[in-house]
Picture 1 (cartoon, rainbow, N blue to C red):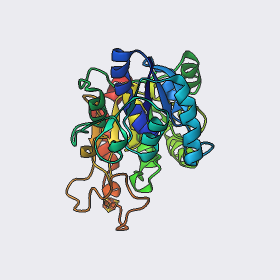
Picture 2: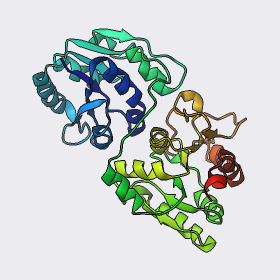
Picture 3: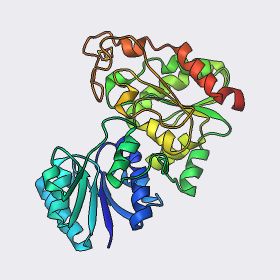
Length: 330
Ligand code: SF4
């Protein structure tokens, strides 16, 4: 009898759920997953996943009519058990209305709608906390994505040879480090630079590419030009990814690419930092206001944004150097 996982949180959360999917697949066989339309293609090629069921909770499937409609479809599949890593009323109700007899989620919130509630660890990395839902062992199943050969071709067509990838975007404005163009100008003296991101990042990508040009090395603005899985493939080819505390960090982890992650209003203790040995997280120590929010506010509530402005280009360059990405590949 099939197993279902419902994970409709943010993209990064979905990537960090891949160890849980692998642990569940090892026990029950490949699982079906309900997830967001944006994350669906990422999971569609994951070896632990049998089928992806996109759920557009903010679009075509929005509201309780959407929940009831999807629940009706899920009922037909006769799932034996559902794992519910995302604590939300919508998720809990979906599994209940789908009449899945065993519904396993984390304690608190809407746990009274589950048949089994397990405590979510308060500390540790989010991958391990999610694995607790399956009593999974830490480190056995790392985050993983599997772009296809055609995804790899699309990524390879953008640039040849070694390059440093920069991911300057974030949904939350206060999480954006403001010095990517300056960093790119310095990197461009030694190595090619590729900017990764979505359509919203195109303008910033152009600024970064313009900053590299005087240095003479190749620079490519890939923002908005690739699918998400192709972007994962591109990040997988980079010698290192420099990123804010946002989804590309987790894409790099899942593609086994070294990371220098820049934390401003958030901190790694929240559980969403780099997880691979050797990766680096940078942040400004000693700021009384830091951290100021679990996600990062749209703008600095104090106006000065010191948590990001005091993180220097020199410090980021030193971290890239320490990782060895420039030494090995330039
Ligand atoms: S209040 Fe402090 S931690 Fe929050 S965004 Fe501003 S500088 Fe950063």
